[in-house]
Image (cartoon, rainbow, N blue to C red; front, side):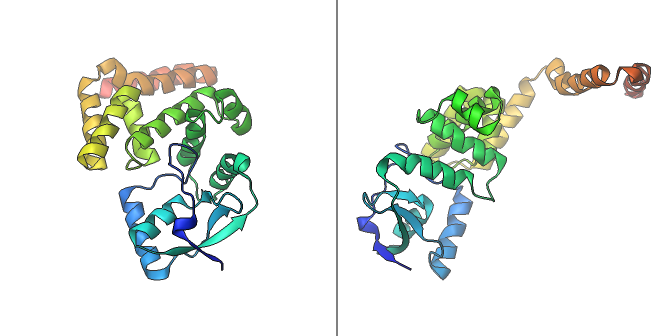
Length: 232
């Protein structure tokens, strides 16, 4: 396994091109402990000519934290013009990647203007709204300096909107306040401001969909709904 000095690897800013998905603090600590005990088992990918890091941002960050001088590398003839596309393919192709994380990767490419919403829709088969939502979530994760997971960032965007979620992400980044605490506060605040109509909006929508899809059961559905209301 070829080793390379970390000082010889060009690690660009996370905001300049697509790197590994940011890890939560717990995930980063877990990776750190794993590398401390067993070393880096999977080589980082580096472009042979430019020496630019293509894949392995988190592993390099841990290696620097542990004051390692060199890391195992996989040198590939990728070419600078193809680095971002290769990073996208490596990330999206990971088998353990969740649907939320995949949306974040696509969203980040859109935010970096490396991919349009229309191109993302065509390439992934996702709806335009899903793609745009992924871009919002990616933006919030980056604003938290990677402290928010895709799932938590998604929760914040849903309950606070993009502007409110951005303020929460900034608070997490600057104050170091716990992610779970911030997300919980946002959800509680949202619930206290909801009207009865908003609270019942989702279950009522499900009832409407059932009525539309199974019109032959309209009488039964009405009886069920009436029985439920009478039992309250």
